[in-house]
Length: 103
Image (tube, rainbow, N blue to C red; front, side, top):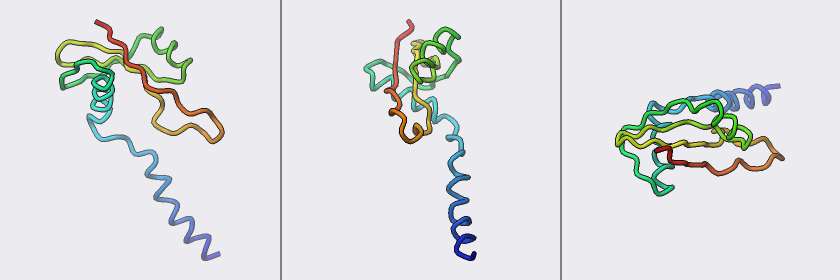
């Protein structure tokens, strides 16, 4: 019985840490880096906006989450990313992120 209690106490912090949100600005920086890796210019700061319902639905079918990134240089990009959590065991890996210029 004592071993079960010790095991439960050791596993408790791991499960609680899994739902910790990213620090402020991390999502914007991640998408800015994706835009730059795709070969586009994107100046800081980056503001994320909700994609249109059509854009969201199109990428949801591809298992991606769409946002519009507005860079401070005026350029806008549709950035579709997979969920942060890994896919369930036995499921196909998440697709690669997609970056599309909107200007």
